[in-house]
Image 1 (cartoon, rainbow, N blue to C red):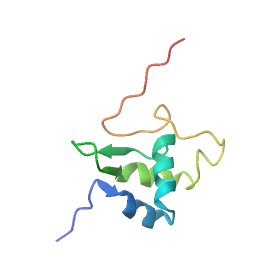
Image 2: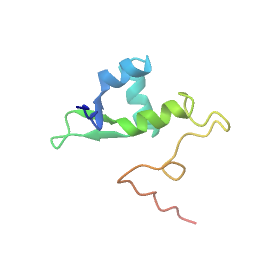
Image 3: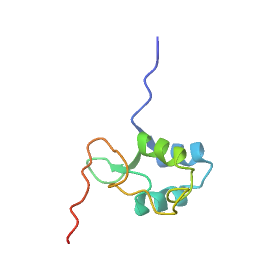
Amino acid sequence: MAVEASATLSVHEAAELLGRDRTRIYALVRSGDLVGVSDPNGRTLRIDRSSLERWQVAGGTRGSPQTGVPLAVERIWSPGRQAPVQAH
């Protein structure tokens, strides 16, 4: 019987998986490279597992390895998220 992986990780779990400290994980959430999901009371931050996997596939550094541009919602697929409307 297969065990289904959780869709989110704690900040501590994400830090261990990436070999980074928790402060770096919070910075990656602030920059938009990782997607953070708060619990209903807003006290606990969970990291969206698919965003962590995309970050690893992109080279595990801030932004795309080819261009140095941060991973933005407009450039990546993320379930349940819509790209922000840009003013022209």
